[in-house]
Image 1: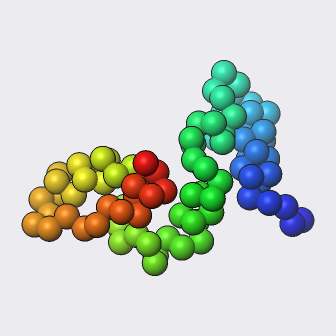
Image 2 (image 1 turned 45 degrees about the vertical axis):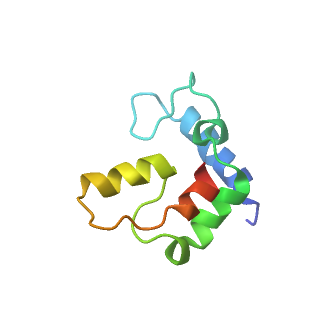
Length: 89
């Protein structure tokens, strides 16, 4: 059943909301829709999911978070975070 990725995410979100609350995978009905919770531009998400290995080495996320990860891991040289900044701000 072909459909666009945005529709797939919404379907996953909808499905998780109709699952019984006492079951694994249930999504609390008080949470905002998945696309709002992710706070990602669809183009950024598409890039992450289709070009991950070419753009990122190990971790993905906002630039500030990545710099903290590299610091916590005691990297001698911090890899470029340009891709993180471009996609996640």
